[in-house]
View (cartoon, rainbow, N blue to C red):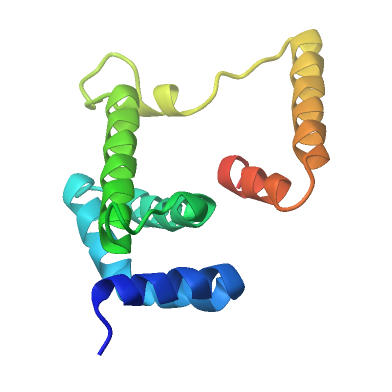
Length: 154
């Protein structure tokens, strides 16, 4: 029977040799734990929890070469990433969150909908800026352009 250190070494080797198979095994093994850690810090929004859990595994894969099993296990590494990601998400949401009531002098939709801009010059500038941004993202190439496009535009 393998001890935890040997299991972690084999899992890291598998992820490096066969990323899809290894990451699937990692997510099956530790997905519940990561979800639990994130959900404890973000209890009110399941979409944020799911996004954060995905980001944890992306961070793990991105930093796989920095995993030092002499300092701790994969489990500890994932819990640390999950905790930090969840706290960052909570802070980001707390800064932007405002409470509106129906008794406010302005309607809720006034805060939620973008201001309508009828100035043709400003609309042209905005459209040009959007086009340049999309071109810059596309110039990054795969997979970076797809990651940014899906994260910020979809």
